[in-house]
Length: 167
Image 1 (cartoon, rainbow, N blue to C red):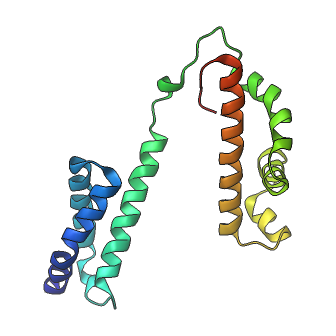
Image 2: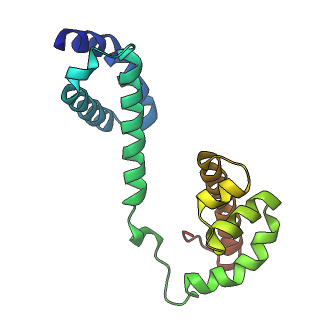
């Protein structure tokens, strides 16, 4: 069992490392990820040899692990980096002021999905079913719409206050 795993690992390790190094731009982080992936692979070594394409599985595990680390970094981002002085209006007040002006500037599709899912409380699943979409497509559209809204809000707020804060 271990032979097929080690053979696949040895054949893909250099390519995985190069890809990760390109993604992270950090040798230290790349080495950490490679070690974590290797440990994960070793814990599933009994199943590995029964896979039809072990190399593809190694790539998938590495990519998914890298994405998980990125998500954790975003979640752990220090809120202190986004602190504004007490003299500015509270964020919710700024949003209440800007949102009615910014929403109409979004495309009809972006505005509609934000209004339904974020403002009117419709679940993403309900939205998907009512509009003949898959749940994955709905999540992707909502994410794109939120990004567009955020960019417009940040642009609007930074223009008014002279500094950026995170929306």
